Length: 245
Image (tube, rainbow, N blue to C red):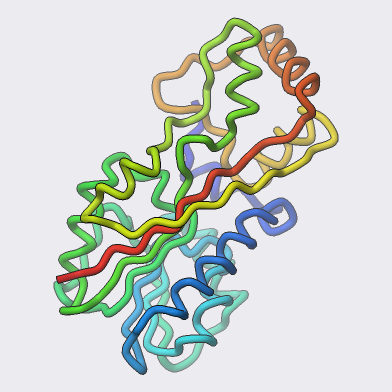
């Protein structure tokens, strides 16, 4: 199985394929900008990628930003997009286990990174400890109906789906009594090969842990079933806001 961190680092064409990721970052930025934030919030961004959320949100709310990612290549691309300047700090960070001072931030934000956490509940508890009184965590993440069409193609071919298992909206809402909004975004592809190329382009081709990769013959069956279903795939996105103490 491919290492997700290595896959993201090799995703040099990320921006060319990440139209949904760009849309989600813009939508999340709009939701965050509507929150009652301090005038100059102290912001921690987890999993900045190439900088979609940073670019969309920072001009709207200002403040002092600590922009982080686990992949050095992604952090460098974000820095190249956003640039340097007052109130900006870039650093490598494991967002699931942040080594930062307690009560240091008014806002912790992230777009489409938390679905890679092995323990979302534990990660949120650790991140909550970094919030100043009245702070918030706001993030977008994948929810359970994501890639339903691709999973259905595996089942039709008599195989176990390889896609990660994402949480339901109910499960996400139970995390610290979070406020949730959801969106279904449909991507249409010319064929299965185009879909797989797009996944590789954004570094998201890794199957879930413990899954046996499909053989070439099995993958051809899956691809045929996917194309028979229209070669479209749905991103089920949850926008989550968790209030601190």
